[in-house]
Image (tube, rainbow, N blue to C red; front, side, top):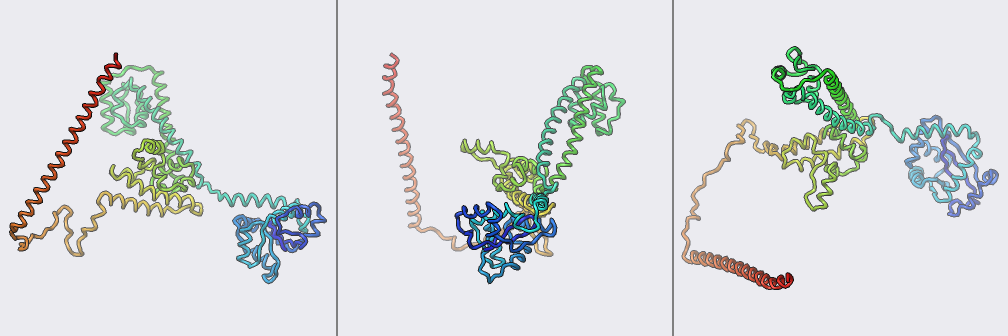
Length: 495
């Protein structure tokens, strides 16, 4: 029997004596063989050794062996030293690798608990069994190969790290909350001095910039605000400053308000930079998802799922209601209608649909998003093409037009050279001709039969009505009798 042993230095092929029962499940005899080097060398001898030329070759071989595949160099090595006509079996430590070797070379492979114990013993005495291989040379080879294999297995790419997207969308939401709080505080604080300005300027960032530039309302006539506001708004603001009913403020009050306005402006600028960063990251990480729902909704879906891979494992039905878990379980508990959408509701395609069509559009969009996310997560290479997302978006838009009734316009297309009919024109109707078969007087028998049917129907309806009234009267009478019986009992209980 021969034993295949893979090392970081190369492939080794050992011949095992027939005295050692490797195929048996009893491993006590095998473990006793490796108690000393002399006893091991009597039963195990090196038949052949093929060393790797460089780290690249070692990495290619190791990556194939990890996936239980037979690389080309291993196939050549085995075919060179073992002929198909020989009856010797090859012992391997991996059953799946043994099947792959048997399919490619036709050599019978053996796998058992005894083989695992044998390879464990060979590993402990490898440097003594293989000539020219020392522990000092083997250690750096193993370390270098393990690092290379780890990098290969990870397939690390900075553009594919979804942690950055999760952190960015979380920070973006926090910034929106803080920005809104600070902006409201600026409005409330400066509103004591110039209350009319809050109604004139609706944008929070423009309000903070105007406060910083304007200062006191008394200097409004001499300050140029054209870089911040439109001409009409600026004129209205200056007119309102003349007749303002706000209170006076000290220089120290203005300094604190200006400091807060600076915070609002700086936070707004940083938020804009962060939004651009998130857009670039999403286009690199999940281009198909970004095309379908946008970078903000896509990032929130990834953040809610935990990672891009976790989101790719979700079915379309789960992705559709992702973010509406509380509403879902509340509906299941109270036996009401379940929600039709979650975070996907904020996508532009769902927003374009009419209220009665939002559920259908969100279902179609969720199905396409599920396909797009799987392409993004499982696509090979550092960059993924957004073709699937573009095609899917076109299909969702077509479905949206169909729901709105716009997709039926092609049915009324006119032939070539003819005038197209107007969609608002009434339908063409052909005048009805004279039907002689219909102009026949009814016979007396038919008239009598029709009259009898009518009378029977009226009698039946009258009978049903009487039965209903009778049932109603009996019910009321029974209820009245019950109340009369209960009256004396209530009087006795009061006494």
